Image 1: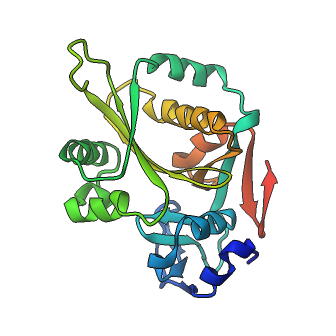
Image 2: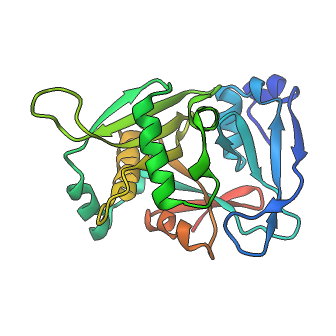
Length: 246
């Protein structure tokens, strides 16, 4: 693994281990393993930035990447935001939710966020385990962080200037070369396109900050749930130790 010199001393304190196998969340009848960086407590923003460049991802303080024995279907994906051009359907999604008002805040626990999160999980991922997350599990997953993380609230405008209705929350990590989309949850409504709108908003944020990439985690060609990620073009995939335009 090649890392910047500024990260070398801290990297020397890290160890990388492989987890035991567990059922794959994305491909039926397969097992998965992860490679984990430990101890997670010393992974600061500089180290995390270098690890993301090598295909790692964050779930709370847990820094990992796929490490399966006989499967390499998971590939890290990132959008080249400076060259991005929205498709017609993406422009429609942007117009549909353009009235939403974003507010960037520091990561913290809010009852309103947690209530929206539980509604989202029960509607979109019932039976997947996360629909049963209690406050402690939610806090570990989305609030606790050792890196440069921000939450973004998206609300409807309110005529009386009181906080409008909360529709969506995003957790985003700031990196040296881009943003990493950690997780987004939103109001489970029919005929909405909150997810697409949110990625477009993050692309715009990265562009205005002069950053090059938006990291979207992992993509699996045969997983329908992940097909939306390759609709944002141009994108690159990380495989065999390097990023390649797809």
